[in-house]
Image (cartoon, rainbow, N blue to C red; front, side, top):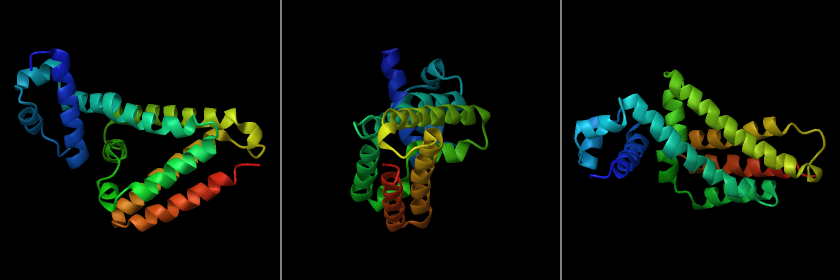
Length: 194
């Protein structure tokens, strides 16, 4: 690969896949080099070390994809219905194998937030961005919702319940648990309406 930007993108894509499959700590730079068919020099031209590469994967691959996944349901005319449909379709369409592999972003957050301050800060910023997206869109339809709601608190509750259901299913290898929690989350969101 002679195009530097194309090389950088390839490194990010391969690294994102490796980190998703193996975790950040178990991902080896030599495996990334082999899959990208590049030299160490080419890798270090773009990223000074593995940590910088991990930050780039988080900021440029995982976080934007994660936020983009949430935008359509949250920005729907009725964000409560949009989120309920979003979660319900995941519950119906997601296989047990997909749940076991887990969300790439959630996996990386769980692995690295407690051991690296750089990851923790980036994770917090991404969570705040998602929370603001949800809270803003709930506020947009506040006249249709119960009075006195704290939209930021509700947004964090929705996201944490969703991630918790994924983690519960992943750790128990039981998709039925995910389905049950998602069904209850949708019921809760429905009760936010007047």
